[in-house]
Image 1: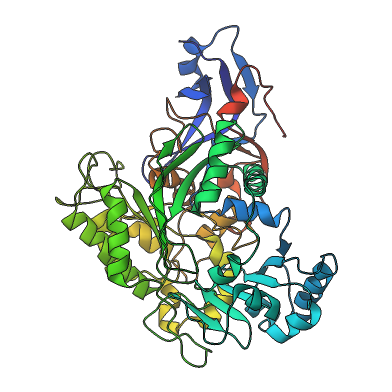
Image 2 (image 1 turned 180 degrees about the vertical axis):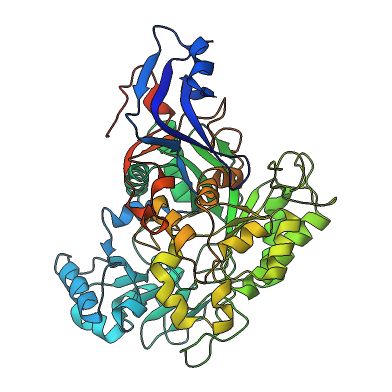
Length: 549
């Protein structure tokens, strides 16, 4: 079997099967959009023919494409198309000026929808009366950067039927200030005109094209509901997805007690859905993650919000677990981690799923980096999204269960000020302690949680993981961070057999950097440039290979 494409002439880096390894290769041979072989040029010569297309990297650096294991694709695209972007706002005056300017472009009654404000950066919180004054004719919904807190005006509350007496499970409402917490968001969102499938498709494509420009060839979009799932299925059927996407299907939407039925499973070359999503608590940067000590600077004292009663979460998770779905649960605070790990332990102990190997079995073991799982833990490997304030007891139990951790190093880069403002001192060094996760033997997949942050780039994430830990000694090596942005993401979604490394049979999904990241100062990794991003589609015979370098 001969190669149809040969890539050579630069630095080619292949993450090892275990964290910390990084192999330098001379060339990669491809056939029909997959890796045929990788290694020394002399080893690949017999695979070449006169018809083999040769791609000279001209000294640049090739890696497997980055995998963002947790990024809200459609919301990234929405901010790049239709949504008011407030992520760069540095003061309350600038915040209100941006809202006023957008309101002047709208017809009476039209919703003003925005996202990205951060009270720690602006120096204060939005207020309902001020929003009423600058947008009296339009209902306003402005989501905080974390997406767990929202500012609204009086017309929005009236449209949603929210009064001072309104209560919602798993959420809180500050009616006077017009601030909604956690699930209360759904009350107002459900009062808005529902986005059309065409809207969702536009936002998804805008988001994916942007991710691809950052070197991302695979992504997991968490919290996908039925209309968004339909849009993804339509785009996949039409062959329009530019990046491979794994979906976490939301079971309990905000704003009510209804539960979506389990979705129809789907798997193609560019779209996968066999996982579900739950939210156990809130966000850390806005002090709604559920912790065991009170947050600093908040009056009255707050310990964050748990969204579920434990038994209800267990019953919903059990239904998915028995049907072989992977489960990804948002859990940041230590109280939420206690709850979720307890639920996962019960699932594995009481309800082994036939046809799925134990989390520590041969099907999930990574050479040199075993994810242990004892007898009786049979079932799909579940995930914890964020895993922000894990202590030793959480790390040990997660290791024993084979749970996959999906943290966001870039949070430390962008949200450090919020963490220091709100976190009790005793918890600061536990905050996104990436080194501890690897030292405990966990499988770790890095991600951005965009658009919670404005810098979605994996290169910024690499820089944060290596050079910007919350406390000295909590960072990881570049080789380990690269593994978590490639192999780790593949493992988290069950796709380690087709992506993440330059292995025979893996998709030809690559990122081309301007230079070798091993030669860059750790604090300057974010300054590396993505020259090209290629997926298997770019290597089909009828497509001319795009090379931006």
